[in-house]
Amino acid sequence: MAIQRIIVCFVCLILCSQQALFAKESKAKPNFIVIFADDLGYGDLECYGHPKFKTPNLNRMAAEGARLTQFNVPVPYCAPSRATLLTGRYPWRHGVWFNPAPDGGQFRNGVGIPDSEVLLSEKLKQNGYATICVGKWHLGHDPQFYPTRHGFDDYLGILYSNDMRPVNLMKGEKVLEYPVIQANLTKRYTDRAVEFIRENQKRPFFLYLPHAMPHKPLAASEAFYKKSGAGLYGDVIAELDWSVGEIFKTLKELDLDENTFVIFTSDNGPWFGGHTAGLSGMKSTSWEGGLRVPMIARWPGKIPKGQVIDTNCGSIDIFPTILKQAGIPVPTDRVIDGKDLFPVLTEQAKTPHNALYSMKGNFLFTVRSGPWKMHVKQSPRQLLANQGKDWIDPRGPDGVTIIAPYEQAMPDQPPGLLTGDRPAPMMLFNLEDDPGEQHNVAKQNPQVVARLKKLYEEMQAQIPDSIRNFNQKPKKKAASSK
Image (cartoon, rainbow, N blue to C red; front, side, top):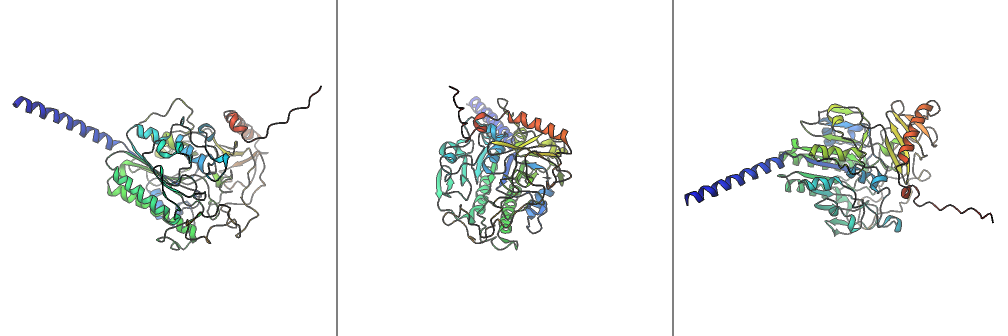
């Protein structure tokens, strides 16, 4: 009996040691949080120069980490930008190069992120991470595209933009609420995000928090509505900032702060009422106002405090950067366009990119290399240029969605510069000297134009014919000579 008790005790000791070691290893793995605003302009935050909007929590995040000033997205609208963040690949590779929409007809239904793509959520989940998506998905609204089919343990949110119909709030794979009171979305998303952190405080986790705001229709909860003194848009920004504060408050309370890498950024530039901080253009244009977004990264003890980093990089880099910090190999069976951004965040290393590219529709539009940016295709500086404050949005609110239907931003509130040389193909700008893209210097720099055109042609050749020729009318057959 004595020998049996000794054996039992020895076995228990081994099991306890293994459990303790596993717990220690799990706790040692870093947590990751990506907060992704929708249509937030480069100048919409106080720490990026907005003259009226107050963002104390994001200001503090920037002061305690790194604020990037040359952070780009590959497409100036929603879905392709989101797929790029989660795959590290340009839209012509991951296949989501336009916006799925439940009310967009056959062209925008039945499409989404392919099963063949490897998402950040899938890689992290395979390596023991708890994962959740809270907010806008927009990588397909049919069941095979749901977040829960692509590496997320749970989901709460609207599967597409908040101005598309129907505005269904989903929980997991079921409709939780319809119609949605959009004024409560930021709070509900924040509450679920905080709950998820608490639920998984003893294991590594990945929280992907793609907020609905400030995408139109703008909506803020009663606690923030008419409180900012800067209009409805200012109220929305104040509530987003509060949400960030709640996340950090929870991390500190649970002693997770120093083991959590947090990124805050946006999917593209602003709609009307937003601010580009002196950049040209807006959402859905290929000017800097559509493609350059705020990005703040914070990780106490890892990322030095108070940095302002001017290095060219982009959302395409988030995928490999997080995988590297998780100790997970980046896939080698496909092209990963993103690069590890951590040397930039920790040592202000030079850009890892020879060039960055942007796309609109099924065409490449711009090439960015160093200070130079070439607009291969022509893009307007403003949408709805002939409309004013009486414009009627064809995607009006669906049901009980907002609390301020008459305070929405209109085309008479353009977010970016409208001045400058008239848009044309093959324009060249030096963004160091001319960040507002006012003066086309292509004629003065033929060698730069030739170099960027070569880069464009090399990348253009990698775009599949199925995308390049999509929706194009077939050429007429030549007349017979007989």
